[in-house]
Image 1: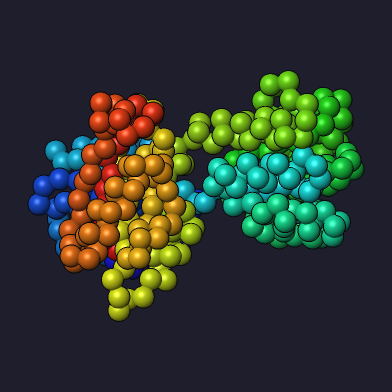
Image 2: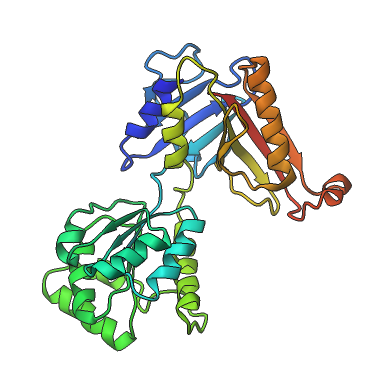
Length: 343
């Protein structure tokens, strides 16, 4: 279904975007894509289940299973990949890069010193802009899924960064420094015409108050605050960039792959609803739904689907609460339903 995934890649992320999948009945597996409540894919649905206007838009508050027309439908609220913009590549920035990577952020560092920019690259930043902060940030547009972290070496540079960032769309802005230092910077940019409401929402001093002292502890406090902010929104669904690119680049003349998506989660399962993993014919995977025995079993099921040519979608239920789960070492104690789809 390449047209669907191309539409997802090109969708306007400033809109409310929802991908829907029917999970039961004669339309099981049928999909639709809505943007600002209007059906944009498919243009001519093969079934009459999905209308031109999104059904019951006000009832969909987050990714999950909803009952529409008496039928269970998985609604995946699409967000753009979360991007972490780090201004500065000093000693605190490096562990922020490491943790941001583990959390699945796309990391973009802006640093004006070549040596420090190289350190950011070595730490694993996906993108590094080695320019003075003002022109470097000018190249970054920002959006509802962009998180800005200001970790420069001095308040003059902090002010340069903040002046540029407060005028951009963002999910979060945080700035390191003492209350006195950050207050002066905020007052200065308000005097220069910045919106006081936006400035007063900046997280300063940055990070949760956990008594952090070392660079690594400060990085934990920063990323914990970003996680807290991220999870307050309903923009945690969608397709990671590497999975979407892999789907679009799969050769059309060969067996493609199986996309596994968590559509229901109860208890302390390791991954959230909408988490995705792509299983390729050779058994390699892109992404993870939590690892361990559960993931290994699903990979086996997915490869079996590919080898036997099964193209119908299926639901798999995984219970990590019973005796069998305990015997296998599953410690999460939750249940998940996973949708397997032939791509």
